Image 1 (cartoon, rainbow, N blue to C red):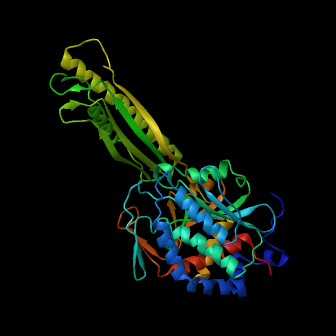
Image 2 (tube, rainbow, N blue to C red; image 1 turned 120 degrees about the horizontal axis):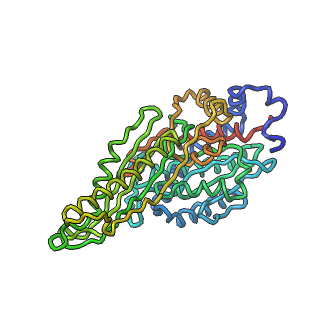
Length: 421
């Protein structure tokens, strides 16, 4: 990887807490913190503007164009939208390796969702206003402060507005960055900005696997074709058996059946039925075990429905009567965990100690899953302020306290990128 340009000999003698104190005392940094506090009206205006642009899964283009324009206005270099819709901009520095600062552009809300975005005092309201309006605005705020206050840093900083974090987006934006972009081997650490708040550090990646289970049959009329196999009953049997699967308390493991579809009318035997299943665990092995249990339950359910159909029709030769099933993966988020001695975690803890900010380390599913699963250094933190009602139409964000979150991000980013004497 070559010589790390972040530190000179004098800096290398400092502990991480001492380094944070030194950086925080620099005149440009102090000016930057004051500027961030004074710019809250602009940040709130940007957040309202962004939230009025729909950002459904796989429909982030309009938001990407909005962010591209602002990246250009803020003086970032090589601003562009990549093949999957990620928006990238670079603040140059010494060397080819860089620090990434990212925030996802998408929301959980489908296309056509009413966006009743509004402000009452310090509170902003609207779908996606906090998740991830708060993260995107923090990304812009930091880029603005670095430029306006001429804050120095050694390594280049990659500003990234990525797509596909929510739901079936399946982290596709971050996957692309770490598998196919020119930065895939150049990012030393990734600081992910996700949602509001200043009280968490996501350093452990919660893995998940998601499936659509589809059962198909011949269908028919509820009276004249009674006895034909019923895909909904197959799903019901499979759900019942799968729900009996033993779940360990450690490592923590969960499952959920969140969507069920099927049928056309009350007097029709459906030709197909489906369910969507979410499996999560801190252990990849446990996720594999539950996936196997799901598939086994489905096989048992088809055999049992076939047996019942044979009995009703007086058939002795074993048949499946056109029943078939399919388990389609619709999400696969890898698990991972940051080394407790990693530089990015030590920097974040030192920043919080310096600011007197109480934050706790937690496990969650974020864009940080991708670099963490690859053994790369990454954490996810909030963009400051307070948020609530995430993933609902009643979502809100309170701007009070945003300055603490921005100060926290700025100090951590500068410590990672390096600031000379």
